[in-house]
Length: 550
Image (cartoon, rainbow, N blue to C red; front, side, top):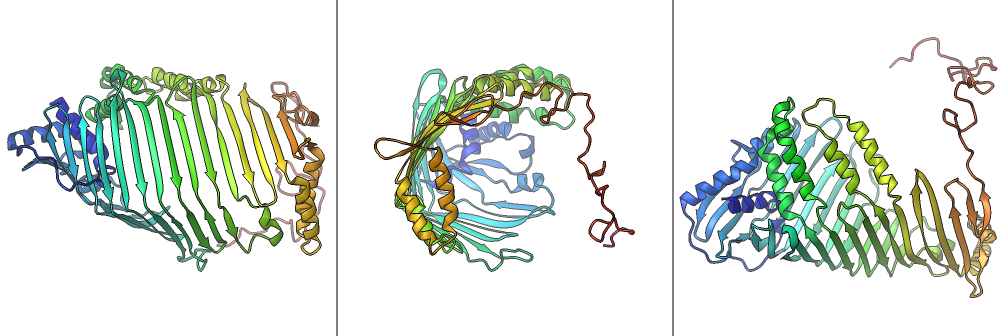
């Protein structure tokens, strides 16, 4: 029974939004035909996890199938019951065929093409749209012990979405898409997941129009991209603990009642806190990387092209010594725009390699403070105070912003930089090193351009000031080492360019007024700040004799 519930719960969580998008072959694994008795038992098991909101809405059903059991999720009734007035959302029902395996796991197969339409007609928002997939296939093996797929693969031939709002119309499309996943059990009931995805092409178009829209008539903006390969790895994901937490929440609707029974909540509180902590840190490490062949766009601004390009992202879970690292690399960057002066063209980066991140991120201590501190038996749990304590704990770890060696390169100029910033007792300190190649030559080139394009003089002035602070290195590069101290002082190459901030005593304002000293308004400003006291009324500053008429 529990294995059935976990399988069906997993399908509720993922199938309607994720699973439809993939696989070949086109048929479920061979399996004995299902029985009505078992189908009824599975329906009952799943209903217990659907929550009170799904009761009586036709949300789910299980019927026998020649290859096992056919699960159907139909959100129409639930959406009609829960959506606010003025909002419509129609989602095509999702179906999957599932069958038990001899090893205790389950085969899952779906060829449902997801599609939906929606319309929002609210005072603050008016929007409608649709999305639809074609040629969807998914096939996988679900582990009841891990609450995760051990393997899955799939494909989607084409996916298209369209949205209309006050600014105009947006359309996007991608495909074909292929997908493969593997899951490996690790310690403590967690799982290592590896996901590979390939999108052969994508495009997006934004058209501007609509009544009262100042952008009406603006040239549409379009983006096109070629093949993109993505790989994601999640180490030690707490999939079972996360699934169990969700099951606990939907099985106890009193947790979300507008008029809660405090005694009933008290009986659940210990279990809830234990399940929240069991799900942490969610995962040990998550890594994602993507490589794209080309991307281009055009619009009223001009055109751009870039490629190849790539990104990498790596982050820990909710831990005491967390990190986040991100990288973005691109070559072949080209921008053609009437808004870019001819003299500035050679300053636009053609290549970039940006690397940054965070270290010493203590997210676990704040999470523990919030979990340990909430009390469902009280109407007045001091969440503001808990939030303050959590913020102080995060700050106490002295999180660091890290700029790993990065560079930007244009036709004339190269810039490399690295460094970091640390928050200590709410005050930042930073050290950043920057080196430029071709700096002097670029200034001279801009001076020549300024003879026919006077607007280049502004760039000449800015770069000349920067050169004055720079230090010439033996290899011809220009270097700036910027240091910011916690007292607010700033030094460039050891020369102080800004002194320490004034020391402000408790109760004083930054301008030096004491805690009990009256602050006199500036001369000529009335106490209420409306009309200058030293000026006679004029047509410009006189108060109206009568209230403005609508």
